[in-house]
Image 1 (spheres, rainbow, N blue to C red):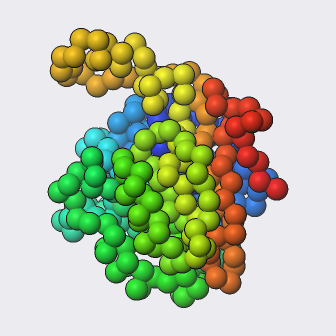
Image 2 (tube, rainbow, N blue to C red):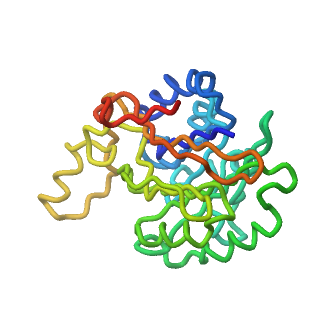
Amino acid sequence: MKILFCGDVVARAGRAVLKKYISSLKTQWNIDCVIANGENAQHGFGLSEKTSGELFSAGVDVITTGNHVWDCRELFSYIEKEPRIVRPINFADSVPGHGFFVHKSQNGSVLVINAMGQVFMNPQLDNAFPIIRQLLKSYQLGANHIKAIVVDFHAEASAEKAALAYYLDGLVSAVIGTHTHVPTADERILPNGTAFITDVGMCGDYASVIGFSTLTIIPRYLKKIPMQDKHGPSTGPATLCGALLETNDESGLCTKISTVRLDGVLNGTENVSIPG
């Protein structure tokens, strides 16, 4: 199977670059499933019914989230009606929505799991490690038409991301790190066949501070006083940062992981790995 994972979609610029490319990439690369982290899609903070609809219309099959998932309050009710939007699985059971979703394609099903880190994030969250392992007792690669399993680990600490990847090595197709909005250069396949990258980056304007306007971010560091208003997203041309995963149809494990960078500041032959 071929799965395209798109990094954190930041505001209008990020949504626009997905609209530009996803449909054609699906056809060109024969992609079975497109996953995108959408927690910053609504003006940089949260996700609404309208913005999630834009992502689905662009060709995204499953939307994952993270610490900004509830910034747009309407999602509390909408996520119950839209299972393709996945919130971190290690939230309390009382929180609306679900931490995983099974996308069914013509070539088989893809289990998408979303989890959030504790280090430098939210120590009140439950530990994602045993929760995911428990879920995998019911959803195993090769069983019940599950051809691939992708984990979006939305976390700050690189070590925590790597630890989860090795903990799940051989049990899932890929562990993809999100949250920092900065793409790392360590994409690889672990010893037992699980693909891993510390952070896939963002779909947003990189002529910015992780997707947000320098005009609002820099004064925060200069003045060092609390500012009540949220900083605005940058509106320049966005780069689509993602990863293309190729899995073995028999084992469900990853045979190849390629980084994808299209358009914007990070675009260029030295920065783009085009599969094929």
